[in-house]
Length: 262
Image (cartoon, rainbow, N blue to C red; front, side, top):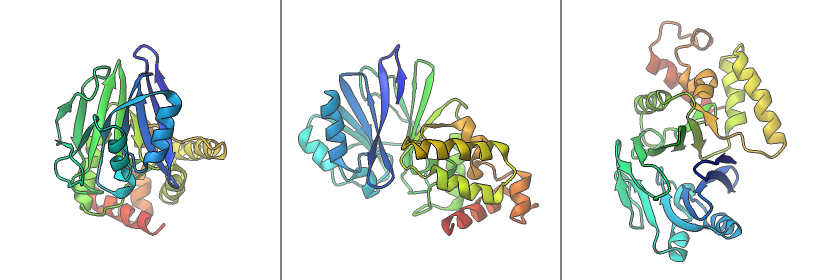
């Protein structure tokens, strides 16, 4: 649990399905949820903490990210729902696009919308800076030591989106939507086996998972140091892939193809 005492804001992961995280942001009274693929664990958490749901943020249209919206809307008809202007939903929502600034609660600062096509064409991230703490809710684009599959976009689009996220401040906390970190690290070690930061991260992550704790949030700094999808320029990776003279996109595309079959 991430807690900022001065602002009385807490960010809680709500586990769903096999490996999803629904992120809940609250101030002790009101709450916002990100990508509620399943309503029941959200409703249970809201009840347990005595919270009033105010808004829903949606990063993309896949069912494991929106499946609970209908039920949550029935239970809380007053809430606002924010989702990509480039994607279609069965429920009414406030359409948002890259560079938009949205106010979802009077106890939160303005949230910036970042367009990050790749996993889906309309995928967006939500970026919140609250009293010097930076928070990125990025759905299925940037994972712990990985990135999302390309269901709709191209490798070039995903690479551009990841470069955009990697340019955020290094202390930005990353709240992605799946617990894939350990498997991603194991893959990363096959193409960068001498990366000491990656070796240490595997040890740290394995310990967390063994204790049934989330490996998230990550940080931009940690991803820069250990995520192969941000390390396509690295000599060791290019050598292992036999792409020493290749450009960024060719190396990135090869890494993505290898990860698909890992």
